[in-house]
Image 1 (cartoon, helix red, strand yellow):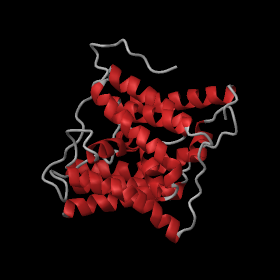
Image 2 (cartoon, rainbow over the protein chains, first blue to last red):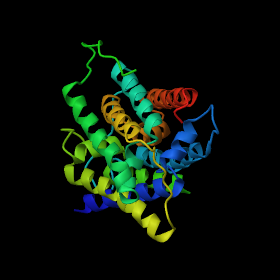
Image 3 (cartoon, rainbow over the protein chains, first blue to last red):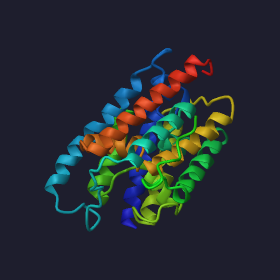
Image 4 (spheres, chains in turn purple, orange):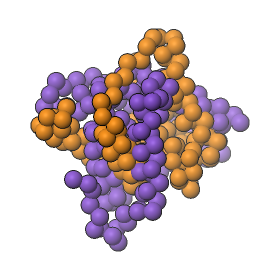
Length: 147
Length: 132
């Protein structure tokens, strides 16, 4: 219960930050990625600003043996640079550019423009589920991305 | 300011619950698409918080301006690619971009470089083709 409450607070602050910073606006995100057009670099400062508290948090984390409200830290431990990571990131970047949305802003926008964002959110979950069935493991390097 | 809020949110998740505040992972876990990851109630609470936070800003600070592509197709194609790609690549802008980069994780540095480059190229192609 306490953990769910902490997660809710974290999610709420996250959503508030996305909405406040303009990150939840697909047109702003596309303008940020639009080097050839009227490039709007301001969202880079949002990402930079987000990294400041996190940089401090990683230092604090290194001095803690356990998180404050859970028994253990459960953090990604792999450092392997593999194909799924690279190909997944490229496909994600394509979708990010085409729609101007990534997962956080899309879910936050459900409160702002539910009708507009719904097709994206539905398609995103379909894509996530599809990855389970077409996992693109390294044994099957055949399937290429669209286009 | 908005960025600091996002970083604070991720710091609370890390120091409070010992987890990465990665939206794609949390969303997959909340819906049951992912079998492992955060406890289900934690993932659901985090995901529910996202629109709640946006609503809070709209109610207190003022209208949140969003403008969407006119056609539904970029949303559907973009959504499919974002969903598939974030699962395959183990994260999105929040997990790799904010949490991973600040941790100097090699995987996140690679992923963030790749999805930023891919986003720039994709929008560049759309711009050059006259679709924007």
